Length: 351
Image (cartoon, rainbow, N blue to C red; front, side):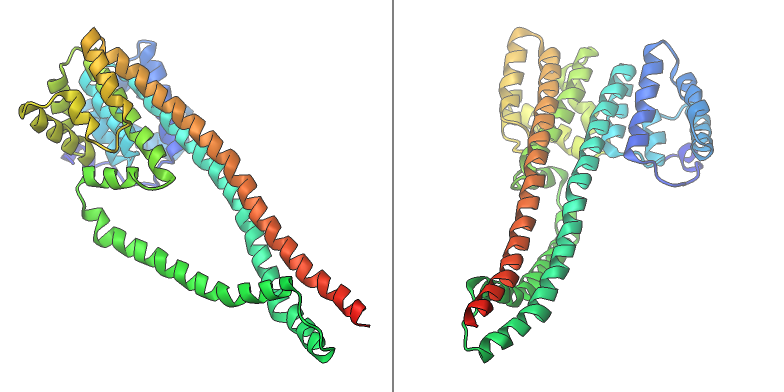
């Protein structure tokens, strides 16, 4: 980064919510006619002392003529948000782009918090259930087993199931641990070194996560391209701006790759259809938009459609995860309860 930006001090990283709220409020002030520097300065009165100091330093750098997106990079803002700012600086629709980017990131942050709430409590219950299982399998059932042997009674199927689970569990634990460590090792040794487009392709083909990821990538690309085209740029000019976004490797490689294919005589929609990390409908949307001369509007509408689908898919997944986790925990508890209770009835029958 240039000298003007590097003189800003490094401090505690902004949370995604803080970043999104900052851009949203900046966008609202820009919409009311504020210049960028004045809008940012106005927000300092609403901030905590440490954030106010950072923004004041950023303002000095901004007034020296440095791009706003580079200042946000120095503040370690999320790359997706920085991407929205970078493209907004190219097409000039700062207010709408800032608000659109912040809306998307706020939604993602809210979904992440929901997921944490949904998962944390069941995990806590799982830990308690696991401790209870260990107590039953290691302490309580051996006593029942000794008693059954002395009375020449056979253990019931639930006791056998708990014993079997107790024997299998250590192997499952070590297998999971090895898989996690292998995945981490694979990520740092191989995946992190792959080209950006290859990474996106792999992530978009993953089970469960893949469909969500494709919607995110498609929304980001279509909203940026829509803003650039509505600003009066041609498709080729817009792709050159993607290629020039050096701080975002995906944008850079994507812009370069599409331009090379266009130079080879391929149509824009056919090129997009070959990228697995985009939704299949994107190619048809582009073709239709080019035919009716309203590609920017078609892309904007489709980007909103992708975001709506993402929200709907997320909500349906959340509604599925929690009952599923509770059902698994409930089944484990019921099995342990029966493993403890049924031997008591068997002992009574033995007498």
